[in-house]
Length: 336
Image (tube, rainbow, N blue to C red; front, side, top):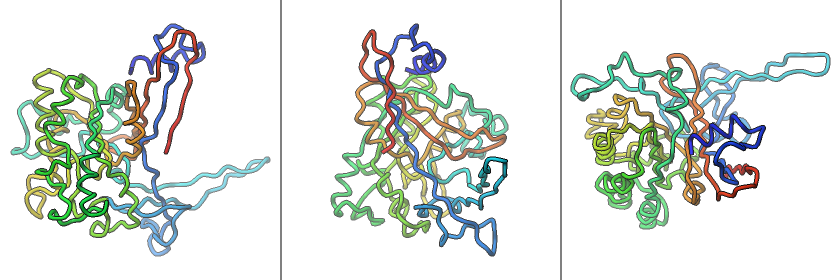
């Protein structure tokens, strides 16, 4: 699939005649829009949440909302150009994480780990690593069943809706083992937990956001990360990354750790970056991806900024339709 996309891109003007091709390529946008706000009058580096741009609503994340500054106009004899500046954090919203995002201490550094000084920044990621065949892991039905216990609403109380690492309403080791035959060099493991429905909770307050839900949300559990590593070692392969339609890709319990000091927390981040494996968070439209019958590839549109630890991403899935011999390639684009 990956070679087909590259070949069709190079040969588009001649109809991909020399490339084995499907009769349809479907592009699915897996990215949430980035809410933007005007700058505060008292501090231009802070957003004014009372002045959203268009239909922006705040999202819960690790940092402040994005600021879009007033238009700068550059006049010509026929009109003018509009240009704006934006102040945006690297790790809010649909975003990618580069391997330099986390620095391991001695105790969390595993045998064969890439030294922190050699871990890639955003500008060092190549197209090979930012693309790859999708291995979809869909546990959304199990998540829905857990939500149905509370009329479809998540609760921070595990006695009401349980998304802990002991719950089946998460991505477990057995889910990873079930797709072991698809795990190959350069693949992207994409977890669909069905959590994107809570993304726009109308608040940036962690304590009020259904999306964060007191860090009681589904994702890749600690045992799932262990199983990924185990399968890579068994098969002697390295995936490009993992991604999910959840807050941190790690499950909420994994993100929280064992106490309020983040002890033993973030297993996906702590263990995968030292293996040069990327993470993409806060995907959407995975229901559209799940409907696809052909092979799909992931394309991560990552900012190429020097030294970056990650950044906002426009993530696309590219999926094959049915193959015919003589028809030209048709392009289908789906956003919602």
